[in-house]
Image (cartoon, rainbow, N blue to C red; front, side, top):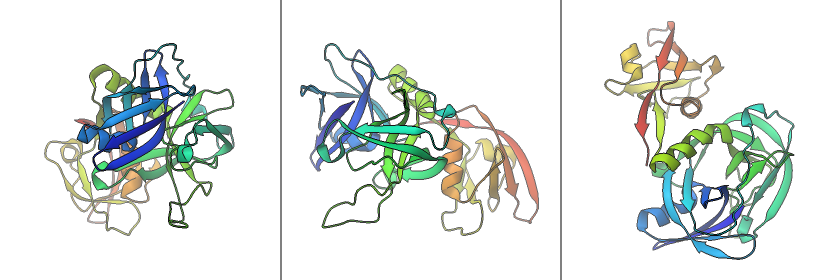
Length: 291
């Protein structure tokens, strides 16, 4: 696990990361390095022995809040991946990172919930939608993207966001026991695409959601020409109430559920039609490039 400092013309940011390959590839959150990446700023990685190295950006994906950077350093050890699909509520987990710049911090907790729909990032253009693992292990500013590991030390999640109660004493509030991690099984596809091509893709249904809709489900305000929803005959005014048999409460949960899949996956939508009827659609998700 490493500490990351990113500097840009507009200021700096700090976070955590971890080595995923002994050749120097490191995974972090997109929002940690976003400003530096867009402005050509400097990114420094500090190892646990105190040594630091310049890093270059291999690729990032703001829609999943993931990024891969690389350093050139000797004798690096990579963290081993676990299986996030096998995680159960109540399992013990450990969060590792550099909260508030305190490198090598370890906190203990449990998995509080799975499939929690949350958003992360800074600003609409950089917002990501996460089908998260929720934990009560203390996660504070600077923990992004420290690993969430199981009791065997294998990484099952990527710490990405926290819920807060607002600022305190002029600064951001700390952990209130509501931390959120990207499941590693969901992240593996993004990581591999970035390593192979420098870019990644996301699944596309081809709809616009009405974010002001207050009823149950996700209301479609429009579709994009030629994409999956239009091809299937789903029109504006329809409301998605279930995806793959799981209840959809709002547009955020719909986006998260879609993005938990890969391009080309087949999903089943249960939709309330504008005339009040209901219909089920089997749809193959399209693909779009991300930044």
